Structures are given as structure tokens and as C-alpha cells.
Image (cartoon, rainbow, N blue to C red):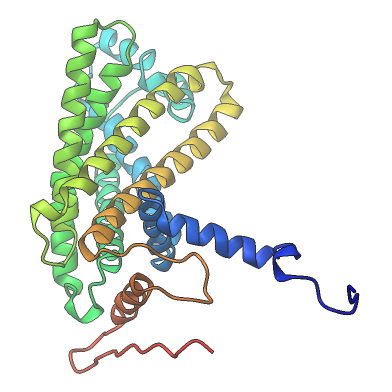
Length: 330
């Protein structure tokens, strides 16, 4: 005789929401590829990658306007008396950007010593902000304690030197990618532009990943993240060219200002975020920080190593030694 007071069999009861989450988490831990991507995303969350990317993109955005001031001023010096070239610049690529084209339409393209000085100083300060923020991001990602990082002076000297190298490579890569985006070039020229841009991106990220971090890293440990970052950046450069060619050229003056500002902010933030993800790939590979759990009620060995890694970053003086212990699960 069946007793209705007995609890139903456990297998007959529906799974709770938490049980389903645990099942999904267990599945991702056992799935090759997925568990590695999950580990990279979890490590990025541990390092607050979104905040790091926001800081880098902020300095990158601020540096653009002094650089544009320098560009317009230098063109004014170089093109004095050359009416044909001035008209070509006015109606060319530079003239398609609403923020600049409106000014060029009402003011002549002329050089100014004061504007050149202000632009150079502003670009240097903002550019060093980019390199310093990137150094801080890479050091946090690689778990370099504060006590092992460069001091105030060496941090800025290294940033200034890297600004010259990385700035030059960035210009070459952007020009090559912009050349690819032009519809008037043949297939061979476009392919050559793609290869030049990609090779330059490889050199750019290899140097950045190696020299903007205080950790002792070998070139071999960096190549996978460098390859990922180069592919990401190449796609972003072509996307930016497409955006300018198909969106900005068709906007009115008022809407064009917002399109430029919002488009630049989104593009720079996405580029910084993808670069940090690429750097995280190298860290996860080197320290084998996978599989990771996506829940907080249980920790795997990789979780404990990653959390220890993040805690030891906070060592600020040489006599400070951070020790991490984990309580047993209750």
C-alpha cells in the first residue's frame, strides 16, 4: 500500500535554479576550449579588466585632440602657399571628420607656434598617461606586486620611451589599414596593406607585452596573446575605417559630432578591453589557471591559485609578505 505521507523520490523532484547553474558550471569545466575561455573571462573579472580598459581608453581619447591639433598645425606650416594641396586636405579624409571639417571650412589651414607647442605638450602628457595606465594594467594582470614595480621616475621614463616606439608603430599600422579600406586600390595593393598592417601589429603588441610589464617574461610565453591581440586590433582598424567611410561621411554636422565622440569612445574601449583579454590569455596559459568555477560556493585548485595570485599583488613594501589561506567548506 502506498503511503502518501512519504516524501517523493529525489529523482522525481524538479531541479532548482541553483542546481541547474551547478550543472552548467560542471559542464563548462569538462568542455575543452570552453573552460579555457571561461578561465580567461574569470581572470579578467578578478583583475577588474573593465576598469583597466576604461582608464586606458580615457587617456587614449584625451590624447587624440592634442594630436589632431599638432596635425592641423604642422599641415598649416607645410602647405603654406600650396592652395591645391590645402583644398585636397580640406575635401579629403581629414575633411570628412565633422569635428575638424567644420573648423577647416570656417578657418584657414594655418600653422601656429603656440598651437604646436600646446599640442605637443598635451599629446606627450596624455600619451604617457596611456603607457602608464597600460603598465599598471599589465602588472596587475601578471600579478607583479607593487613592491616589484618601477618607481615614479622609472615608470615615466619607460613610458616616454615606449610612447615613441609604440606611437610610431601605431601610425604605420593605422595608415596601412586605412590604405586597405580605400576602394580605389587593386587586390595586390590591398593584400600588401593587410600584411604590412598585421606585421606591424605583431611587432607593436610583442614589444608592448614584453616591455610594459615588470615581470620577467620570455618572448615564447607571449606569442599566443600577441597573435590574438594583433587579429583583434586588425579587425578593429578595418571596422573603424568602415565606420568613417559609411557612417561619418553621411552624417550632418550636429549628429556627426556625437557620432565621432561616441564612436571613438566605443572603439577605443573595445580595443583596450580586447588587448587586456589577449594579455590574460598568456597569463592563464603560463600558470595553467583552468578550469575555473563560475560559482563562489566551491573553489577548484585553479581558483585558489588565481586568487592567491591576485592577493599577492598588494604587497607594497619589501618587508610585507601576504599569505593566503582558504577555510574548508562548511
